Amino acid sequence: MLNITIDKVRHIEDKDANVRETLVELQHALDKSEQERHFYDALCIDYTAAYLCDLMADTMTVIKKKSFSHCAAEELQSGSIQCYSQWIRHSYNTFVVKESAPGFMEMFDNRNLMAYLDDHESFVYRHRTLPNRAGMEYFEARAVRLYSDDDSYKIILGYRPIDDIVEEERESRQKLEQALKRAEEASHAKSAFWFNMSHDIRTPMNAIIGYTDLLEIYGDDVEKREDYLGKIKSSSEYLLSLLNDVLEMARIESGKYIMDETVTDIREFDRSICDVFENQLEQKGIRFVYTMDVRHHMIFCDTVKLKEVLLNVLSNAYKYTMPGGQITFEVTEIPGEKEGYAGYLAVIGDTGIGMSETFLQTVYDSFSRERTSTESGQNGTGLGMAITKKLVELMGGTIRIESEQGKGTKVTILLQHRLADDIPVPADEPEQKTVAFQGKRILLAEDNDLNAEIAEEILKMDGFVVERAKDGIECISMLENHPAAYYDLILMDIQMPNMNGYRAAAAIREMVDKELADIPIVAMTANAFEEDKKRALEVGMNAHISKPVNIRALEETLGKLLV
Image (cartoon, rainbow, N blue to C red; front, side, top):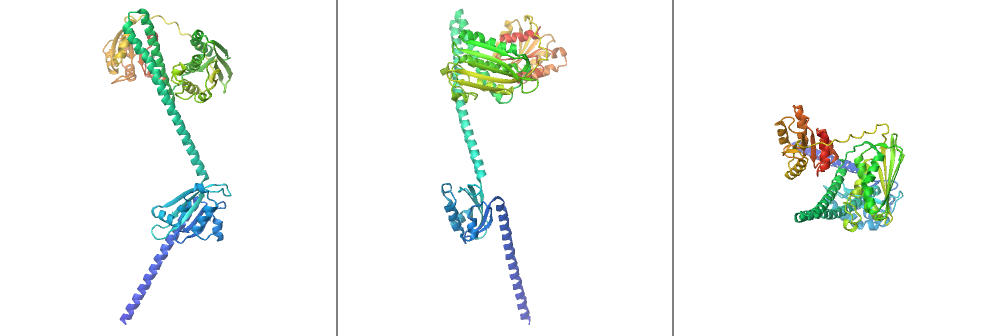
């Protein structure tokens, strides 16, 4: 009896175990079904056609297809294609462009694809097809293995058109190729620039060093001494102009250029521009014709930048026009683009050597020159027109160049200027009285011994008494340790150790003793840009003189402050 009962219990337990096992199997199957459904959903979002394939069993079932899918879905549904391998062959033979898919049959082979998916989560293959009903040619196939933890090789195979992606990639590739080409051209231009710069810098340096050596030999010969000194000075000025061009281009490209518009009489301004060239043109035997047709003479403009633009263009015309040629400069007023403005059209033409059509395409590029200075006989950095164009654009204008080799060049500049007819014309500054500098005491704040020696000699020639401080701290200390009237003026360098010129000037202006605080301060510095001048004035300095020092400009500045 007891044995019978035990057998029944065991039977029930075995039955329960079978049930549990069955339930586990059912749950596993449901999990797989759910996983497959998630795979279907994920792939079907992005793909126009999707298939369930069993690589081991060589079967294939359509999950999804769009009306414009040409992946043999119709043949699969009709039953004419019954297995995966047959579908691959049919696709390759029917619509795949062979040149775009050399490895198509090999990669999609059952065994090869199974081996690949053993080590990779998915497989992606792109190729070109014959255009489908929607005109699409480029397709992507993606195979994803459903289960990597068993012996099954069921995959979801998605298929989608990628014409837009291919086009984007093509455009991106073209942009990269263009960027590479521009970079190579820029690199070539810069290499040419450094070659030219090396030559153009060494030429005046050779003159400076050479004539300095000759001065030591023939210093007693007055005629030769004056000749050598003149050539040293002109070479130095040219060297400085090279440096200024390079620095100015760098400053423009860094976005640090400041516009400073003032009321200007355009008639007097243009006349002053012409005065610079007329004598040189006459000496070279070039005819100069200037005409102006404007109704509004008083305008707002940045005279420094406008002058640089016009002088750059006129200078090129002068350089490349042969004796017996002609240069014209025409200024015409046209209606402004907005109320309160007028357009000013400046046309500068010449009968010079002109430019080739090829060079005309790159004339505004930085470092660009059609000929080296050796070939053309003209010095320059190749930055002149690049600077000119950028300055014109900074002023809101446009510039256009027309040129033909052997026939000359015409440059057209259009600028919009705010009218200032209702603003009183600035009164001429009263004639500056001659100031006697004899006995005036200057505190020179300069850390560089060589620069200090040059400044001291120039100032002593004018009768100044000079005392030197080597940094801002020493300058303040010397000022505080003497009576208020002891120093008449401070010449302040900017870049000094311990305390720079800006900080020193600001500290002086904040002194309790107002007599000391009000002493005239002039920046004398290599920081020569407009923003440097502006900052010097903002910290309380009275004026700004750039290095290398122009003696006449120095005397005029000091004279105004010491009247």
